Length: 103
Image 1: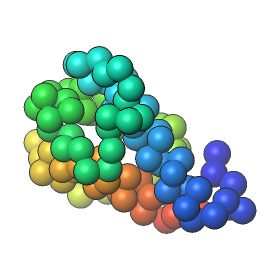
Image 2: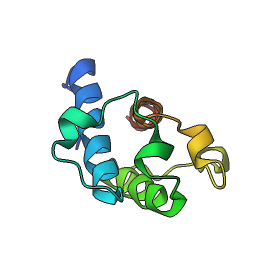
Image 3: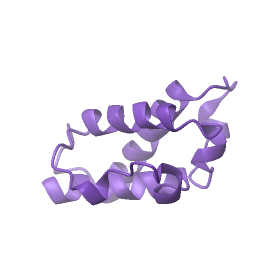
Image 4: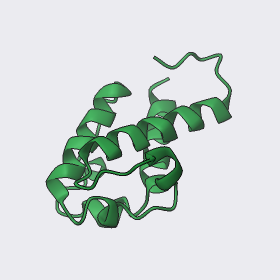
């Protein structure tokens, strides 16, 4: 999935693209150009219109895509999803940390 030869910037870019992909797939609103509209500073509660269930689907799919299985209870933001992950960037940084930990 992630070639250890990839540079750090390539990993960051791939994480950002996958986050945008899965966030967009579970948003209520359809955007003309998600790559141009959704950026690292976008607020997740705004993108999901406060819908925690839609966020949970995107979060679960991202964990599956990146093969992240070793999570602690602190990593699972039940009832605090949008406080834990305020922005796209927050979600990307979490995934990046978990991907690096498993390598």
